[in-house]
Image (cartoon, rainbow, N blue to C red; front, side, top):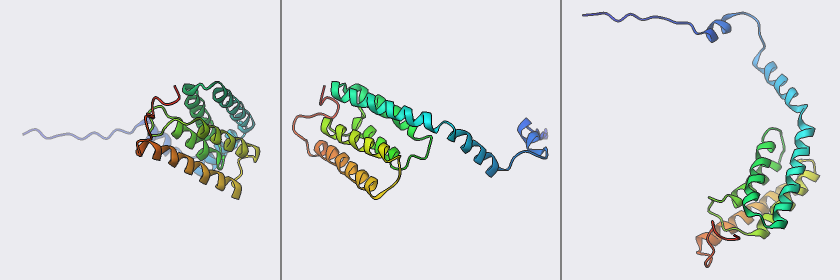
Length: 162
């Protein structure tokens, strides 16, 4: 019977890890966060511009673009500590997702945009007011979901508002 031979191979990563020196994980994370923070002002400007685009989509009743712009805003809000902004934008994405389980409702979208504007004006700080806003958005989201679950007339979640 043939005996199996076992070969031990050291990857290039293992060799690099064995070399003394380098940075501690905490130091590397702090350096990365500091480097990312240098882009915060530009990112906040991008969030403001995206909110203006969302307002324009709402005014023109361009339903398909609301989710696209909201998803772009969500991506940008996820890079930095934005307190209540990220969950508020996520909520907008939920109610505007074309494949979602919510009825389309322009007033609900507009309420979300007003809340986003207030959060941005408050510099994305977590406050009592921002918690009230997030609680209100959760209620709006739930209402949109309940309309669908209760049969909400002839409104289909994927066809309403088209």
